[in-house]
Amino acid sequence: MKRGLLLSVFGVYAFAQNPQVLQYTGVKTVHNQQAVTIERQIPRECLDVHILPEDIFSGNLAGKNVPALCQKSVVTTVGKIQPMQLDPKIITVGEVEVLEFIQHKLTPHPDRYVLVDARKQEWFEQMSIPGSVNLPFDEVAYDADFPEDFEHMKNVLGIVSHEGKLDFSHAKTALIFCNASWCAQSHMMIDQLVKMGYPKEKILWYRGGLQDWLLFGFSVISKK
Image (cartoon, rainbow, N blue to C red; front, side):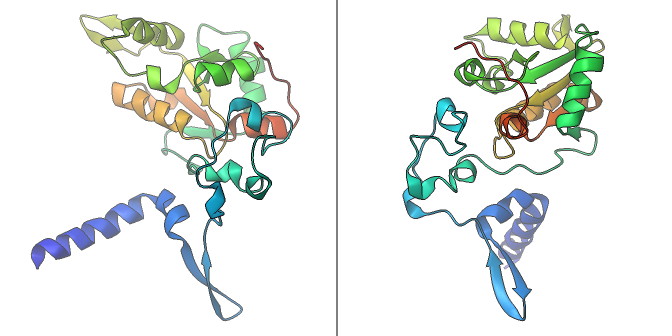
């Protein structure tokens, strides 16, 4: 009995601590005295739809290779909608702040600031924000099979090692982004950096990512 009660309490606590779960469970409310459940309305036919960089960034946010039925929901069908704030000490920024960061911080002081595209290389080469450096989210953690990736990450972010320990005293202030508000890659990168000891006050997060950047018509660069 006690075990069941504890599990129940833990489940409620975990749910309360993770509001992202709401996008899957739905939210019950009342509108005009009628019970309503707010939920993501995703057609069954769209659950297995996969997209490529060119699908999202081809000028049609849904992409030419996405079935017509799925073109309204594909952007939120993939990935996981991210919260507005990851941590009280990590600042979420918008387009104006990204522009200010590039002009007044990154451009004159590249030794102290860095704009990080956390997506994989093929996405970065398709399109990215000018001035950004590609640092794939899955290459941040140390991997004995690819030690060069870890060294590259340290060089990009200004991390040094002393007697086997990471030194963040001269780490750069990093503004990190990925595809959009439904993209978890930048979130995962930030989580990994924090676990490593990266100072939260030196991390900025552009939640809107490439999708919002394009929505407002800002310039992009491409290697293709």
